[in-house]
Structure formats: structure tokens, C-alpha cells
Amino acid sequence: MKTTEQEGRRQQLAIASDPRVARTRQRIIGACRELLESDRSVTVAAICSRADVGRSTFYTHFATMGDVAVAAIDRLFDSLAAKDIERRAASTLSRAGIVRAGLEELLRAVLAERVFFLYALSAPAAERVRERFTSDLAASLQLTVRTERPDASEAFYRTAADFTANGTIGALLDWVVDPAGRSQKQMIDILSDLLPRWLVDAPLK
Image (tube, rainbow, N blue to C red; front, top):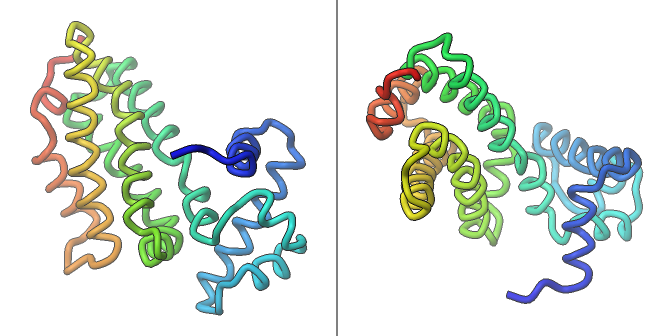
């Protein structure tokens, strides 16, 4: 799909280093979070009023309210993957311990942004949102896969990351929407058991 000029501008603003841009985006995201947590009606007008920005400013940064929710958790997986690689490089934990620590951080982060996950998944573009989260996690996981299997092929890196990300995101989002009596600890135990053994049990180098 061809990226429009406005969409390209929004993508640039999302990664801009200008602190004024970052503050504006955070005000919009923060206003959206407050409205979601208060169970009030979440509209562009309400977000703009609470964030003290104009509608034109909102649409300069975001195309839809769903995009605000996505932006709130967009960099979640990058930061978690970086921490996972640091733990593996430090070699102070067993592989199983490293995996559990990573899953604990992931579930904590997901719960912290639960209102955004729920909103994004209830939006008209829910399937696109799910694909976005899966793609983000897969891209981050490739770094971990490369660390554990440095001699594998590019095909293996991509396939292993995609396979792991799809299953993990599917299970996590299902849990966020409907825990069905599953505690956070139970989810960590289940996901640990389901992950590839070479990722969990590989000997420390």
C-alpha cells in the first residue's frame, strides 16, 4: 500500500528527536489514557480538550484514535528485546531464568497498557492492530534468535521469530481480553513451556 505524504509525515514525527514533538505526542497519549481509565467517552474532541491541543495538531500526529493506542505501546517490544539480549549476554541467569524474567516484564508491560490494548482490539482496525503487534515482536525477537543461533540461516531467523511472535501475541491478547481464570504466573508457566526448547534450554555460552 502506497504511503501518502501525510502518513509519511506522521511516521517521521513518531520517531522525531525534537522534544517538543515528543511532549505533544505524550500529552495526546496521556489524555487518551486518562479518558479510557475513567470510562468516559473517548473522542478526538475529548482528547484534544484534555491534552489542550487543537484538532489539526491531533491529526498531524495521528490518523485515528486507534493509532493513539498503538503508539502508546509501539516501542514496548523493542525495549523488552534489548533487555532480553542484555540478560543473555550477562549470563548471570539460566536460560529458563532469562526466559521467565523476559516474560514477567512482557506481561507487566502489557497489563500496564491494558486499557490501550483493549481499546485497540475493539477498534474497527483490530486485525491490523494485531498484525502490527505481532510484526513488532517478531522484529525484536530476531535479535534474540540471532544471539542464540548465530550460525543459522536468514530463513531460520525470520521463520523462528514469526512463529514465536504469532503464538505469543495471540495468547497474550486473548488473555488480556479474557483472562479466563489464568493468573499472571500461570501464563508465564504456560508460555515458558510452549517456547522452543533451544530458546529456553540452550546452554549458556
